[in-house]
Image 1 (spheres, rainbow, N blue to C red):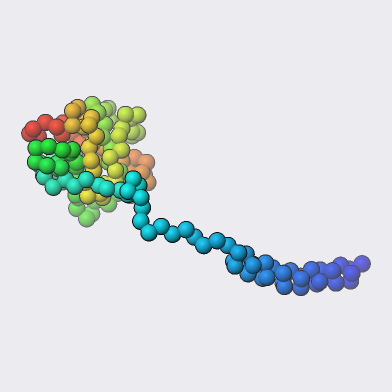
Image 2 (image 1 turned 180 degrees about the horizontal axis):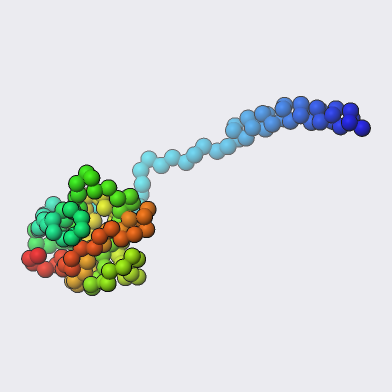
Length: 163
């Protein structure tokens, strides 16, 4: 009883040893090439506005962290606003995101529902929403990896002529 089963097993192993490499090679030959695109369509291309005009620079906006915040604008007296952040090399926080929160939120460990994501902390310039220009609010640094608030700025209104 064992001998016929061993012979059957040997024949199956040999046939699989021949058939599987042939099937693999046939699959490689039959697959379609990956699509290649020379350039993105204009509607999908990310065009980030430039913000050459610097309105002010502050280092006292975040009380717990030594972060330099610059308020930028598309033109000296017109256009949209943006903020840029810079910090010392030893200020290392994983996956640091910047949020805008209108009003003066109570301190807590979670982001409120009205938080607006501005972008990644390491970005060159983060465009501000219209709410940040017209209303008073705070910037929040949030570590996605730690799932915790890193720091909250003092309340600010970026549309005000002087800060």
